[in-house]
Length: 251
Length: 277
Image 1 (cartoon, helix red, strand yellow):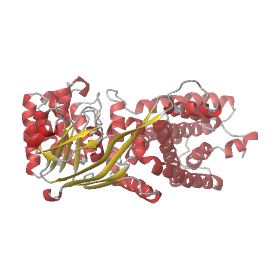
Image 2: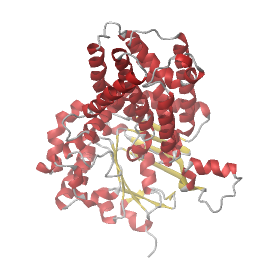
Image 3: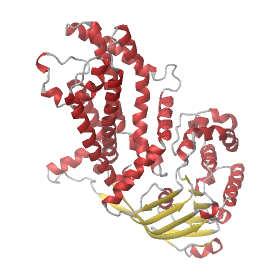
Image 4: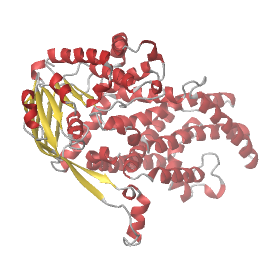
């Protein structure tokens, strides 16, 4: 895909999701409740509906690097998951042109007892590479992780930083146009931060889009040129990153 | 080759839209059938990592079961061993496939929750992963079937093409059952136990390792049991027997009705599945 065609358009996105109580996940208790007419003492039957995002609008074009800020539970990750295509909107539309790579959870499709190399294959397949492409790029990906001989060891022996290296190496090997990242990138050491930085710059040269959720304002200033604040599911307008301070609540 | 180049996601727009999105999911899973295969293959490799025989361990234990049950029941029922062992071998191997596709179906979505909650991969990919994993296992267990048929000199009668058609009909049915229990287990966590009990009960009610003779010939206990037909449609041709037209009718109708009902349910709750997990 030509870099210039890459875009994300989100219109009036509302995302609600049900949170099921323990008992509401039990079919037997549902049946029991029906048969005894609802008199079964205190149960946690309730299905609470949480509105994770309401009426979010945004428009990103090639070259935009958006930083998402907001408190825990404000809806940053939900927005990323919706952009990745995992959460379906309840209202509104999400329209993404371009190959998406989501790095939201380090544990995506990994098998802790498999070796690092096996996990590169597994993740690569999930990320959309063919088996042949993985074989071709295996050396490059392995080099990029910088894990060397550790790649032959089971993933469960890895530290969080090592897992992050592996995940990042595979995810960015896909030549994605749209990179969605939750803030775990900060778990890597200084070395890794540096190479990750270069990869993101490369992505920018290909005129992709980056959406990064983070609490670290310095990280956002470093990588992003735009910023959006989400508060209880409501998004602010997208602003230039130089105005980041204006978005922060008066301390 | 690559997953999503253009993705549009919208809120609910009526039932027709929900169905077309569900079909899009199914189509996408076929486009990326190689992914389901890779995942299934990975499951096999990782399950048997470090063991020398791999899935042949299960083949070995199945073989022992065939031998044990074969000789014991042949004597109990007073039937010739060379007739009975091929019957039991086919019964145990294909019953194992039926039972495991359905039992493992319960975990299809639950196990994939990490992937489903952050990628746009088609949900059907994970259904095929469960089915393919068991097809790979079956390919190992074919050793037992071939061995027994050759040893007891039954291979000349075996009608493999008709058996293969039967296997397709079997797969068409157990894959919707697998999807159905997968959807139910995603929503209700006690479904796997219930499914486990039902499968165990069915194993005893189905002629897996007993011969339906005497009073049971054409008895309702058999004819109303879908598992009897599922087993019969593969086993009979491989033993050189003919398959009742009734079996084909039952399985054909069951496949169509089952798929329509399960797929419709999938279309309706598709958006919610990821939140159940």
